[in-house]
Image 1 (spheres, rainbow, N blue to C red):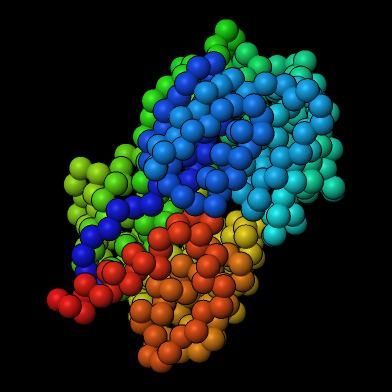
Image 2 (cartoon, rainbow, N blue to C red):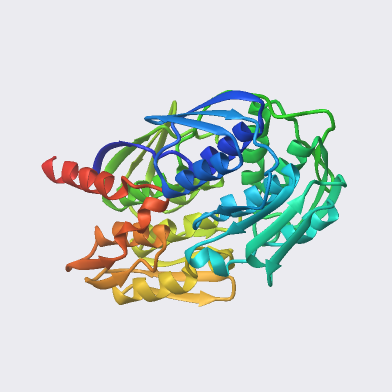
Length: 408
């Protein structure tokens, strides 16, 4: 692997900005939204709630505010868990009767307690045993709620947006995981003029604030960029542009794992350079950044000895059960992964060829694509198109970097 690439747009950041732009009264301009399927879903949701959207290239102009639906409205959240949890809270704050539907594996994933928190805020929220479809009816009549956030921080994001739309309130949070993504939400709210204060038991949105129109640029995505950076650590020298090392995105922690594994890491203004080194086994805690599980599993497969990924239990409730997917699909290529409680023990060594399946999961597809770079035989990947959920250009980028290395 050699050369340079521009990191894809962070769908997490883009979706937050789009929702806030819909709440603001006036026109907001968001640059660099990218073309992922999840962002396309968010654009459709913003339109469905009455905001006007104009898309030109990678720039979106959103004119709000979104308004209370005149009648029952159905919102299709596709396979985006962030959209489902965030727009559930936002719809409750707007009022009216809204049904939120999900597609694919998202239909089997729990909301993580957001329905109880919305009930405490005075909205009606019903689910199918804690899973979508969701039916919500506002407006909010209370300004205090509790949320168990041990499953995901996305419910916190949805409720903070709901409180911002409703004029303020207090959210008490218990067992918060992926705290950096709440920081990302707070930073996005600040861009829209809404201050969120961290208090001892949660977060306070002071009264009297409303989202204002804004102009912003979407950050590069550390989650997606982690895959070619890992590929460079396995054998190459690659520079990624468009990444902010001071970002609140939890997955910038990939730099810690790369250094721990022996790769060379150099930082510059909005760029990261990773080069191959003498790889060694490493230990890493995935608890705040579970999306790093697949790329770091691929990295561990290239490290002689046994690497340990802790906090792996959070990989189970994703687009696939990633613990099972990684264990079985990597196993088809001769890489042994043992799941022990909340840990993955990954035995590095040779990678063979064979037939593998992405299981409808973009991160599993990318991890297998990176692992294929070390395969000693042909590798056939079913479901490679799953990458369009977050990075439609992933395969082109990987092929170009691999081709540059061969030409060099």
